[in-house]
Image 1 (cartoon, rainbow over the protein chains, first blue to last red):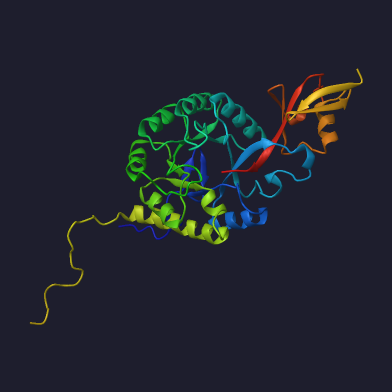
Image 2 (image 1 turned 135 degrees about the horizontal axis):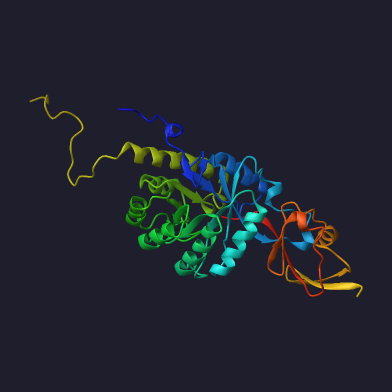
Length: 265
Length: 69
């Protein structure tokens, strides 16, 4: 039996034709400072970072965008359509993101509800079809719903990103069965996006066999984002290795680990 | 007409006429790198900035990447 000794020996995660070094993707929002964000990204080991498209602040143009802090040579910048509530709006943001960025990848979000930030799956499918048709590599943020995931794959998405729980909630993975089922049934990579709060959440997500995980708030809102980023890196790797290792079966009865024979009479 | 009334990122702005997109970016202190320009909902690529004139009533959006998840 050939042994995979560490994550470096694992097959790399490939989306579209792009190979990512790390299965952990991280966001760049909500950090207390750019220096802290950079240190956390570094500690996470992620090579793919998400960014948002927003208006330039005309009164503070010297305080430039995030490109002045993030080296696009070093990091793969994945533009998102966060904050979009219709397919039309998301398509507009995706086109702007492609123009601002360095690749034709987009993390597609079409949000349906302000309170839960849950996706509008009808709008999501519509936008995914349009963007895939325009040559975008679409990574679609979606519910933990198998049928929607299958439709997104049919629509030409390069990856499907079911949520662990709502964006920014830190509730962890609410439905491991759904996540596993989506992974089993899809051919494109499955990257769980949103909802993880701490390292054990990330580990559990990766133990379901998914291809990757994306997080932002769990790092940015940790008391020490850099330390949490390191923990998330280890947890993602541990969960991946545990999945590859294949866990022991669960039993409802105890089985002794030490020999039952040879006990003193 | 000596001035153009524009809407830039949702704000009313006046610029001396004639003006191109490049002129507007220069006035705002933006060098165009990392900034994407949308003129009346159509993206105008950077090489076209110097030759794209602005007209009275144009709506311009100037966007860039910010931190996000």
